[in-house]
Image 1: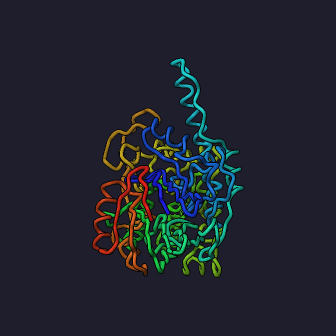
Image 2 (image 1 turned 60 degrees about the vertical axis):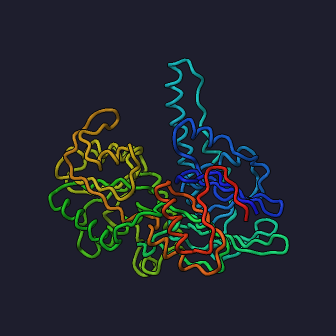
Image 3 (image 1 turned 90 degrees about the vertical axis):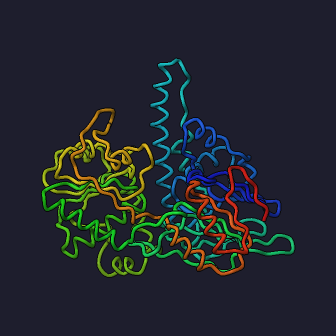
Length: 464
């Protein structure tokens, strides 16, 4: 078997890996590459292989850096099956449509800019129709249900505990006279999640391809995160302020809603108005509610015996722009959760513009903000900050809690690998910037001294 590394090599974007086995070609992941604009356009539009020659596609989970280029793959010739879990398919359906709309808006903006220079228009990578057609090609099955996908290759998804429906991809391969197990970790969750089950151990692993998003970092404790969230929120509400939370639509929003639900039920948080102002977040929460098979025992019991964990009498989900605009007139204490988590796009920028200047308010970040994003500027203490091209003074309190991350850190990844059984012969470290993946590779060499550990570069080929 040969593995071609076509994405997320020494970076965390554009996951894509082509496996050649028994004369067949199987693609793991088909994510959007996000980086410098010209490089991104080139890599996303042109695949380093002919999509029509693929015999199958396997998707670990629905984040855009893993599934975001599937519509383009199908539009340019791939007509086969896309294998995933049930929840991954449902999340991908809304994520890909949202991605198509964002690309349409970006293309329209760039076309206007280029028109002033006499340059031709820009076409979006794919349309919402292309996204919907790609979703028709999904073939779904549950965790721990082996599925033959091509000659000599059987896929089993094992819960990864990362986002709803996320799976580790177990490939049981028969090649000639030998059989072996190749494990692609996908993205691994931290465990002890508010909503999801812990990552499940995998047995009899011969070859491992593992993520390294936080392979050289240790997160703060989760228990402390819940306490800190409640302390910051209650303190702000008591002084009559508003809490503005930039949050990623899938995963982080649902965690915060559930935490606030529990805080309110336990009487620690006042029952002030709470708004989730994001169409994608609202749609994603509906998908979460439909997939209790992914929940841990605590939230599953809460759903069955008490109520919907993502609903409260004081909680409102907002899709319509007109309803979002009405929040500008909101008086008194309230909580507004809105995308995007890095404050680079979406309705959160309007809420920051309206509330960042009042000292009684709190701007609370609950996830990573990449360098140069508006969120990173606010966290770094820049004052004023530019929002929609105009400067706004930062007078609100700014805080950050990183423990809600959906990615395992160095210690949690270590425990994940230690829980595996089998004599691992070779390990490929992917999906991590160099300051994370290179140290994580060194850690793995100590953890598994008999294994060859590589950190592939773009288009490198590994023989198995």
